[in-house]
Amino acid sequence: MADQAGIQPFILDMDANGNSFTVHAALLWDEQDVILVDTGIPGQLGLIREQLAAASFPFDKLTKIIITHHDMDHIGSLPDLVNASEGRIEVLAHELGKPYIQGEIPTEKRKILVTPTNVDVTLQDGDVLPYCGGIQVIYTPGHTQDHISLYHPNSKTLISGDALTSQDGVLMPPNPQFTPDMPLALESVAKLLNYDIETVITYHGGICTDNIKERLAQIAQGQA
Image (cartoon, rainbow, N blue to C red; front, side, top):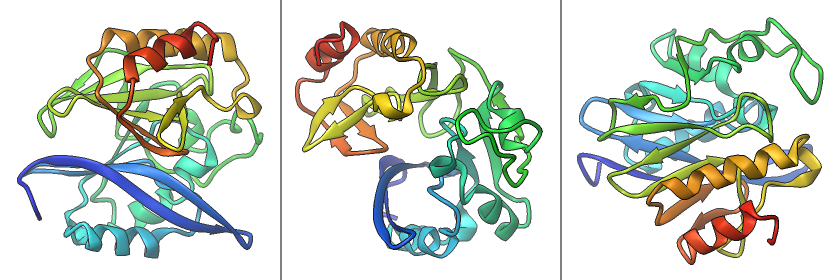
């Protein structure tokens, strides 16, 4: 591994029914933990193993998975990852996401029961996870009711999940087609102005480093 601690995008170039589908999950690590944020669509265990190896982490070093929300392109490969680790990997998600991920109630959008995965740790707004120098949980509902974003103060990086998107390095609002409560989603974006963010890893779009504060303010006001 290059550094004792760090954070980077974790790019998954996936095949979704013959169509290329790329997402930017995230990887955080320190001397104790390697943490993956979100898992792509179902069937990505092999790809995730390859990408971990490319980042100089063997699969057996992966200790935790944090889920930003229960949409299928974020939790799809979670059951396979946990099973492949024989239960070694700890799963963290917002308390409202737990019954969806555990297959107890149908998903918000597709109305299906997913393959159950146990959520080991439930998260709430304001939690600070004692990993990788500290990871702050920010409750950012709107895209889904259980959506969280993660702020890493040491690197001033926000892992936005689907609370934000980006295009060609420009920070953009959440996708209205897949965001049932856009007014609430924009309120969630406004919360992000309270953090000193220099880099955003958007799940759909990738990394943004330009005019972050300005773009957040514009998006929150519905001007973007």
